[in-house]
Image 1 (tube, rainbow over the protein chains, first blue to last red):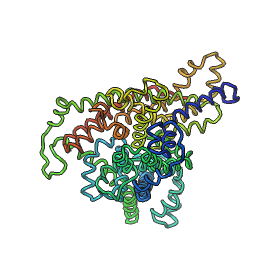
Image 2: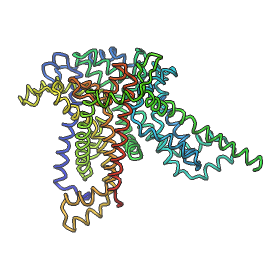
Image 3: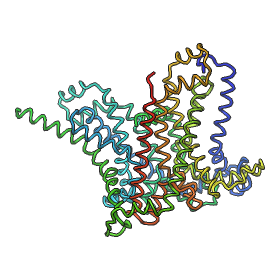
Image 4: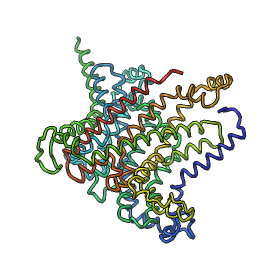
Length: 278
Length: 297
């Protein structure tokens, strides 16, 4: 396992692993290939390359899924949920790590305890609560519910990281006569940036891909659907139209993949930060 | 206490309240409140719509312990699924991490490649594999004439379980790979090199140096794979919807069906309390066992 030289064995391992990786991703490659094939081509042979590129599959999926609309919907939910989590969790996480009282400790425990509560063990009553608060069948409602679900882990990360921000800064800023909120957002928040990046990545990826909560909260509303719900309906309805379905799959996953390719390093770092600290 | 001090104290108190209350309210409203309500509902008979909620005491718990084949099936499936997926995910991810931690060409691209399934939503993963198992396997079978591809991977109740595990492991590996690679990067090279000089082989080096040193990563990875496997839902929802029959119905899916298909919210709540307890007991036990094995570098 030497890191210094690259002997011939290492080259062999590299080639071997490339083969393994291609095999590993082959199912996804098949999705790409079949998304530009005609229905009859898919039913005769899935493996073969298309004779011509059937781009109309994408046009079909685009209209059948009402893609632009649902893309914006999903974006609204994700952005609203993530923004709320970042603001509320950073404020509270920072304040709790700075205040050393018993009250502060109790509040902290109350805030992080939900990390041990699986979603499926409170979803039934959550639907009831959301209905009482008129948050069902609304994108804003869904975004708001995500606050409660996303804050615990994010607050925990902010709480831990706040210890690295020197305490003298709090005092300087308050002496200059700016209020606590302005002090926080102008002086402290920029210093929490590394955690903020991780928190955004973890929450945005989760909310974009989440299925069950949108299914429960948005169940009846046709106009406020997310892409994941559309994918679910799409496959239910067009079970046999594999060519449109494959194009639909690609349309659904492309935003996440694009984001991943752009922010690769942050995403992996953020995911690990969340996992190791949680 | 001077009035000035009192004012400063009140201001600090107000500031504390103002900055922490919004987060706490959101958590109480959307997680802790509903959780406590679920516990309360678990002692009732309620269909989710009626105003009338009838107190039934422990009747729900008595029913799920003695008279619920569906939940019994779901528990057996979930535990089997968890056992196999847990071992497979961690062994494969750690093995891959060891290889991708070596100084080989293109290792960053390779790491990125294995991570890709992890950024796709589980619900879509399920549909992709439904396509592979049906259409894809038809074509593979026609090309290779292997009996393997002619089997009914989603229609046969035993094979459907294997398929669900296969897909779940395939999707999850990338995440755990990243955790293990992060762990391996903390292992001091000098210790491994010293061991080489002492004449110990790669297997011995792994079990006596690397593995003890990366135990914190193992703890985290096993914790996550354990709790995620116990609450598995999405992949099953889109791949088999728990079928054929009840063969691949997990506890989480059984809760969903009980509450939202059968409209038995009280009974579903009792099941969800049971799921909470199962996950709590198993993960606390796991953390205790694994934490004891962690050593300092």
